[in-house]
Length: 274
Image (cartoon, rainbow, N blue to C red; front, side, top):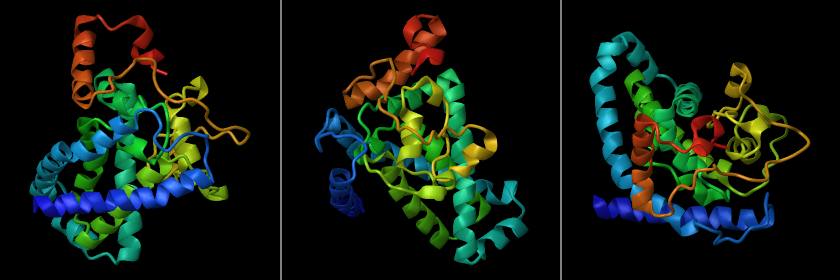
């Protein structure tokens, strides 16, 4: 099974390179090299995160299966499992992104969660590979929690596979250095320009655009920021997150310890993170 997983991961990576690298050269937001700074650091996340994420995901999904009949009535899960795909897929995406929005917003609001999420916000050059720079704990909290809820509600394997594939591709697309003109759909579907504002250092964009797939959630909850006359220029946070994979994994522990002992430097406190 391990060689199948390695083959699948390599295949997906090759396809991602073949799709996004040409697009980022043809219609870029910013003029930057393919092998921009810290690309190797992000590659290490792509290659190594799955070890922890897969193990954690299996535990969370097993827990969801255990709780399925204890939290949701059998009539609900039976109905959901029998939904035709044209209904199940949009509904599953809504369930997952509502969960993502809630947890993502909490990751910006609560200092403990922010220490893990800050790893993702340390990105200073946005492109498709930057999507991989996520602390595995943060990835489990923000992404797998939504999948677990889908499983607990009883969505069919086919619906889960389709929604998972859509999420995978959109997560790389929204971080990509590609101008994708969405027109009126920009208020409905999260695109690169919309999500780039979430990573921007612009104070006006701070704590905005939490949705991962469905931009209209931000408009409903009052957290959307999408100026028509300009695009984000700079990304990142003030605190220099390490460029070593192992040191990055330990970074939240260091920061949490500083929070507990009250020794976090003033310039990198939560309210001044951008």
